[in-house]
Length: 505
Ligand SMILES: *Cc1c(COP(=O)(O)O)cnc(C)c1O
View 1 (cartoon, rainbow, N blue to C red):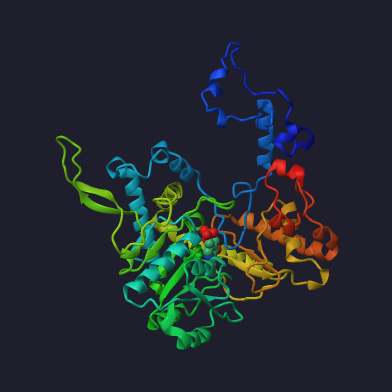
View 2 (cartoon, rainbow, N blue to C red):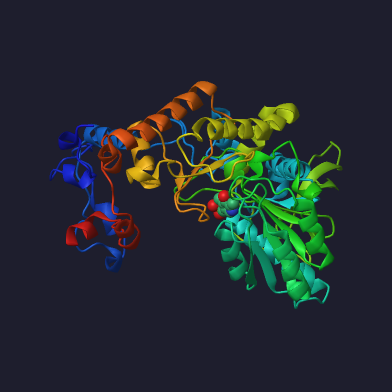
């Protein structure tokens, strides 16, 4: 990109009086502002950039080339399941008939959309092995909060409200304890063993000590290290015996999709990140969708609105049938949590998820988990000579290394991640999970070809070699990106997000 010509900011390209439009000579400008009350009118002109159209188009086109997404290249961001989103999903979500809907329009006028909504609820219940789903929550963390609220409502309905503790493994994603705290529950940490799995003996001790106060245990499986919890059935049984419920954080469901179901593992409540496992692109703040599923006996607590299938009687057709199977919106029963957000949630994400499920079909969807697992293990076995593998066994959909094997070079995980940018790759997740000092967490997803993965492995090996032969090169990377290393702390603590502000600092 030619920065001198196209500039970093559109304001830098502004030339006084330059425009990208022309109006007829006799165009009457007076009415545009004259109708506004004087108090609402600007005292001075807005400080907007003044540019011709071609300059604007080139500026934003060039900026867009600085973006990196799954459609640009390999994006192995562990814990995020940045999987490819097939184009047909976007086309369906963008259809006018769906995009133009209003959440308050009468159910009779949007039966098709409600049918999609209902069918997705049913498909997720089948994939999860649970009774019913609500699609209302807008993200994974929002689903966690909703699920915990369901669990609270369940205990309260049984006059067992003293259950205020939530057991969470120390390897859990940060949203788990955060959601429990927001729900007014107290977090109790369960230790992990050296291999990253739950320390069942510690769990037993905790349950002996405070079993009658435990509302739930939250777990993800495979866990945050990508390891399947071998004693999951024992864990769910122990917690149930103590009267608590099991919450499944479904962010890692991609590893198991089609292979095994949280309901069958003994979980009572779960969320699914549609924007991870079911292909919506994410990052940068949304939109997301975190449907929550529950076991039979908990469905009455789910939030409203609910979409239900019934035999309905709409007095619409003059001579047609007055009764047929249709879909209604149920705004609630006394036991329901009520509304937890914006009506039905992010419908566009649900359309993509449903299109994704239908286009894979029941046979191909069973290959998602196994192929994601195969790809991660192929990377693990290929790189364990150069990168330190703290947990040796089979991983699921992602693999965690603890930096380079050779610690004498001084090259850190941060340096490796930055050097990957020079080679055109998105960096893996780094310094998470917190169990290791130099975590480097790679999640390839099921969609990548062997050629893509082999090319990535070759680059990772090359960087390990560079760390030995020319460590400075790696430590000062990236060298080929529009900007070099940013000061992470400054960027997080003092972000400058507006142009005029940036002039003042
Ligand atoms: C991504 C993730 C979450 C949170 O999901 P959001 O949709 O980002 O709120 C929770 N747990 C795990 C393990 C995750 O990877």
